[in-house]
Length: 320
Image 1 (cartoon, one colour):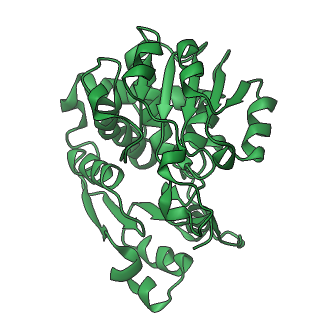
Image 2 (cartoon, one colour; image 1 turned 120 degrees about the vertical axis):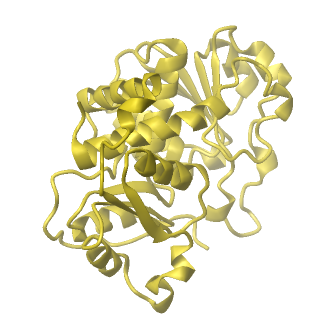
């Protein structure tokens, strides 16, 4: 398997007014509106009931998923809509017969009101949007983007720390193949006075194209492979796993190459800092730190429900 799968772009067909494909395409007013809507839904869950009656979400997942798929499906059901789809679309749909993503989406968009797509190829969600008559939400396209994860990450930061602007955020782990860190960095760059420290071994550093985007947006960026040295200066430590499914060959990085969050790292983090992870974790956070009140990753995962409800309201029914 190659490190990154890429699909060539095609000319778009008729587009609906909105898709959610690329975190870098969002602006700050929309991001803040989505966070505010999610917070209102969290405070008063009854506001969600019946908001999208009769609407149908197509859940098309060509890669495994627990949190993203189930939270999107739960979000639509709580809003009064319905869910159809394929959990293992690579083998349980006509993709197994060779059907293209574009052809599948052209058909499925005739049955539904919104499509949530996860695919192993970078660019697949953009191709789907070009072929769809209904909004498409990128639930992860290879090593590319995962915008709703970044939105729930921002929501978590706002909910836990009370602000986003002016924070020093450490992104750690597999930053080369990790779409969650890439998307979060782009959304953080919308806010003033953001400082990022990128913590990874040299073979897993963030790609140069994103570093250029961040610096154009006046984000202060540092790079290091020393998590323990970086920890004392952070407001947020966002740890990620090794993306084994995007690696191959005898020279591929191993989990042991990643920085590990253990009690020593937690002792070095400031008392009011936040430890986050998009999950699943596979050894890069010691379970012994789960009881630390700064460990927010399970709270973070739960926030995905209200954030994805807010996204569905935006795309299907409008925010209040």
